[in-house]
Image 1 (cartoon, rainbow, N blue to C red):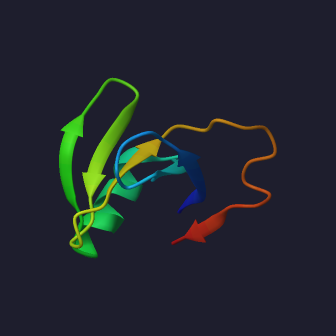
Image 2 (cartoon, rainbow, N blue to C red):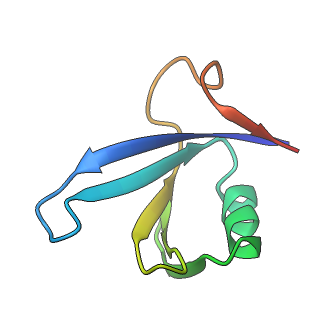
Length: 76
C-alpha cells in the first residue's frame, strides 16, 4: 500500500501548469501510473518525470509537505 497527493505548480512553458504527485513510494506510484498508460521520460535522483498518453508531462516526487498522508489517496 502507498499514498499519493496531487499538487499543481504554475510554470512558464506553454502548458502553464505542471502536476507533481507526492508519494511515500515513488516506484509503486510509477508502476501504478504505467499500468494506466503513462510512460517514464526520465528517472532522476529524487523524482521521476512521466508523460500521460495525452502528452502532458508530470513528476512523481517524494513527500514535500507536512501532514502526509492525512490528505492523500491510498492505493492498495
